[in-house]
Image (cartoon, rainbow, N blue to C red; front, top):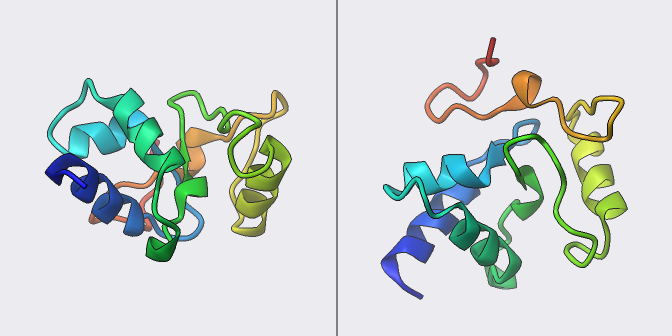
Length: 110
């Protein structure tokens, strides 16, 4: 596992329950804001023994992972709903209400 992947997994491990982070946000926090796709790959291939909250990582518009991840979008959606993550009528997460801000985990984005 390379240094970038280790950093991705370390950051994802810190996303608190009830919050989400975007692929691009994590890439930026790792020092490479253009590596959002690599973060997606890392989520798909995260070692199970790390027990990462990969379900809390979504795209910038709040769309869930493709159906082949988590066993289907309905599973990821249910996991997030159980944590209190709000969804909009279009099925996307309401990012403005639950985006994680490192160091300010209780702060809501305006």
